[in-house]
Image (cartoon, rainbow, N blue to C red; front, top):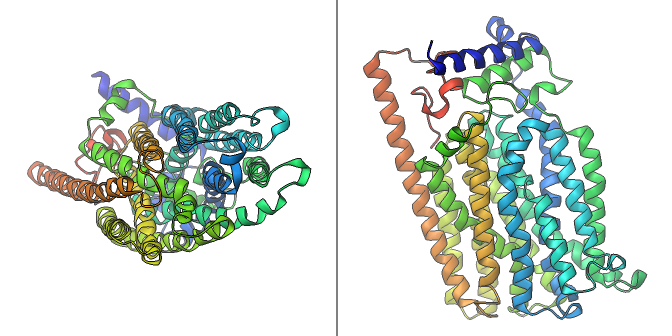
Length: 505
């Protein structure tokens, strides 16, 4: 018997054993006369989405609060130049880029319920240390750099980890709305951070600490507390939720398996270097990776620098913090609305094109105008445009990669590319492109939006051609219209190579 066939048989035996452990879910699904409740996925939403959204919200808050601290006096306190501020941001993002592959591979071993809350507690601790001068960490610029490095090291695995986690919970056509709700935490954190910073900096002088130090301390402490609670709230898999019936679990197992989706703790998909390396030869992964790089630069530029940009538009201090809120709030609402329609019609590429066009218009107005009010108004186009690209971008790569090792690798790769883009943009604003016009940075990000749209169009064309090729092969071979549940050609074994695996456009 060929080794590949033995491997498939071994995987199927492990999956069968797993099915038996959860109560014969697949068999139950096949024998049920009535489908499970239409509210099944909503039940999972209620249990899972609030937990991961708050985790990602706290991550975004703790990573980006340095921009609020900068406006509140951090730069003056530590005698930092714009160049040194860019270095501090870069030091955070470099370990982000490195750690993401390792954490996605590790999650298969230790499980998300253990890994994700542990990451939260660790980065919350490092965030707190940025404001605790009694430790000696932030009495100097070098101390801040040390904190930022370790913050990035322990926080970097969260986004690819949550993306992989959600992709193991939901069918492909139900994923973007959930991802968008989670991603909205970035917009909400960016908006809320301004409100929160305006309140916290009023603690200036309490405990002989400046207001910016209390930003780091209080936000970090809350993250530590929530990380501890998340150990008890976060399920490893959807079928481990205690309130689900056997029929519910049966439907989940069958639905996910039909789409080549394996649960995080399910046996059968060991990581192999050959399998991982194949991920990087997929054209759609490379195109989305490039788009991730471009979007990462845009989103991080706005997240890190918008309060500082607003000071160049005539707003100062607390007012600059508050004026950053409305554009981010609009971004969160539009992203969720667009994701609802994207899931309903299965159009990831079209969603990216629309938001890319919106961002392009916003950057063009910001570049062309010399009127501060008009430039502020352009933020209501470019901020929703940039932040709205993230959900379909992340969902698109998760939707079109199977089995689990390829999906985990692809998500880590795309997220690493977004962080490389973020590293680039830390040098664009202020250092290479001076305030208040930020001409070079604006032109660069304007071009990035255009190229992002081209990547989306190119990916749509390639995936459409692949779907037609697979349909032709099925017709020529006279094979069944539906994929076999088992065997080397099924989606569980062959993944996205299977001729029954249809790419989401």
